[in-house]
Image (tube, rainbow, N blue to C red; front, side, top):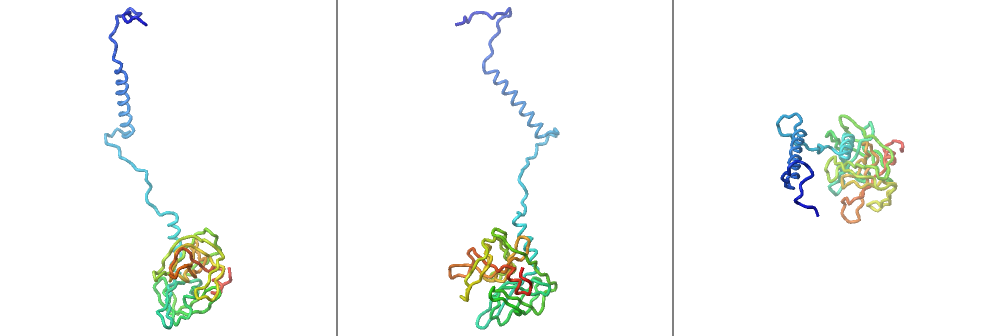
Length: 267
């Protein structure tokens, strides 16, 4: 054990020992000073003396890609949409939808919308109203073609599309419950489906199944793809209950089949 009374091996007189806590304290003060100077330089590099503004990195609210597609689809089809009202003997009639499909202003719709009607009135997107009549029909596929006495001021036929794949976007547009020109969005959830007719008179076959909402009044309206092209005509919804409301499954006649009733070649 060393002798505490021994003098250091130097010729200088012995100095008083410094407290052990002084060095950490001094280093801490120096570090704090450096931090303050660094903060001031970073926060105010121009040495303006003004406090630096706090910035946020959040992005501005913008239309999502899916929303933008829906908007574009609606804008393309809206001038071609038709609201259909019918009268039949013994009841208050029915509501349905249709779409202009050629330069002559002919309207493609579902046959069950106008079957047995004693009177048909159509309203075009520009507000023009006119009586109309069935000029051709395809009962096997629930498709009818209407001609109106008076057409809209400017006839804008919809663009007819091609086939669809399961998983493709699907946009039915129509007049559910009389809510004119309503659009919903979903996907094609099945192809080549069969469905028993509501009146029990057989089956509809080769249908497009989709999951976008449709309800009474939507029948006869166009089913559109992401480019705003008509890929089908809405014909039915599936509901295992007694209520005629949508629960997740709708059906459309492919436009390749439906366009034949309008005098056009099957696509």
